[in-house]
Image (cartoon, rainbow, N blue to C red; front, side):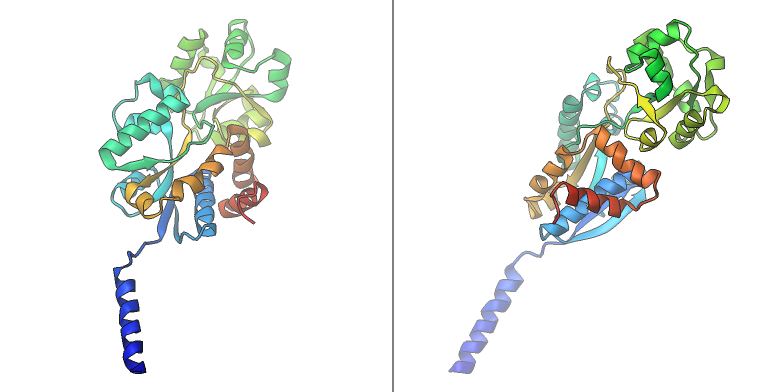
Length: 303
């Protein structure tokens, strides 16, 4: 009788296990940039801390590679940037991308309708192209915004800008000039081969060829280390590229607590915070995972 009861109990347990849905680990990925990897590590560590198993597939590739992997179900979550949805859906001219909340809402709606991709909470930051001026020059000429910069240029200010060929020739500089009513002379532009922002920032910091202004991305860590002043795009010329984790609907349904876990983290990240954290990775050489874990502990998200 006892053996029969044990057999029945074992059979019930096996049937329960077989019937229970198997929830796969969440594959967390990122683009190649250190910022994308750092935020990805924050998300992965948070999910682990809340008992959600994860797989680390950071720095998988450039945007098209990571995007394709998400749509194919090869990864589950990665950090995108709101303004990129304008290119994903052939709607780059929509003015919504120049406002964080409007761009977020539009991108979230388009991506869910087309691909069942869920946009989680965005950071209050933008990694858009911008200009940054050496601090001593900014202080001497009262430069805080792009409107201030335009006034300085129109008044004959001795500006020398380091930028990429793409920035100078593909419309970004011309768009800024039109919006803010200024014009850069050819001798005021130093176009660097490759045009990485680390090179433009370094040239401004070192005063190479009298460079005092650099093409940057808004959350570049080098801005802090080089003591540059990021000029505010006060007339909203550039699209907002706010970091936003995006996830497959299937994984959100499997782990419905996921959006709430990620929300306070993303709400804590603004441009100043990201620049400081990025500097630790980009300038000081710390690993993205170390910086991510330190930040989570400092904010009380991890014990």
